Image 1: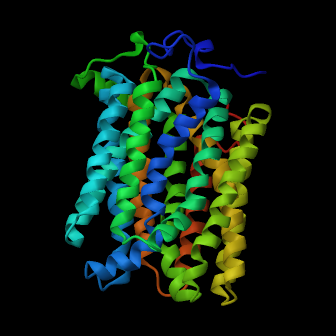
Image 2 (image 1 turned 180 degrees about the vertical axis):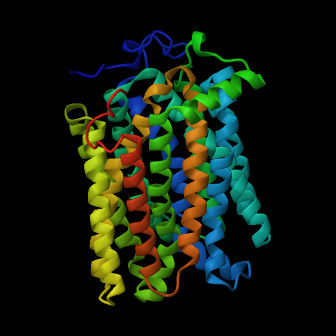
Length: 420
């Protein structure tokens, strides 16, 4: 099966205003990746700056610095409930323009924050603004592609945007060589301006007129109820939530693990890049195999691999044999499995939600992000100077995700549940 050379070939509703041809497939993937990368940039560029921020704003408790990450994630997750409904009513494009413009304003506010509490407030608001990209991006892809094609588009976008977490800590550390930590927020402000300009000039409206839904209680309740009662959607949403908590636990803990456990803070960006790079490799491989093998076969194999790797890693840490090499190898292998599972879990969860894609994406985004952030914060707060709490959290998340998938599929892996 060949992919279309433009989105116009998929839908007559997605021709850019003033353009003669539809936005190309490559540009579409690039723009989707750029929007998806915004959240990763806001999180990962901060990692090497956490000690400087804590010192400048008088944060003595090292674990408390993790709130800089979690505050963003909570705003990012909570706001997704709102964006789904309003994007189903008013369309995808205006909501994206509003959200990213607000992100630019709040990033500038964070750059001039005078105390830790004010910074956390702007971090929450940054999350609220960027949440528009999480909900609307998935909806845009869902309305242009479906099934394995959707998984392929998401995987290609993941391949591009996953370069961001690979490079972001190094980018942050680079700017910290000649800018204060506040300069990172000005860099994020500039990136937001670029993306909002790209959307404003190139992205058409993709919401089909027949899919527009009025904002009223009964309509919203009906859509949310469907999103929360469809077995396939709920099961894979919950599996995403617990497996994502492992990632957030890693983000909360990684700077302290390298600084306090391994006494190798300078190596953090390099090793982090190698670990995150495995997610990019997984996304690239997934884009090539998912249409042939199917989303379930790939993701179920990946979650089994994730569980095996993290139980092994926990055993190494528990036995006292953890080194920076074992940490890097085990985490890289686990992130490879994470990358194979997450895009496919999301595609499976969204597959039965075409008519309410915006609301469904918002419900799923809220649950996976807020739930994952809370669980991940718990993993991070358990940091005791070693990698043991994080490895235990990863192993528990993997096992629970596997159990949820088994329940969702009626005990049957690699193929759809009987009767679905």
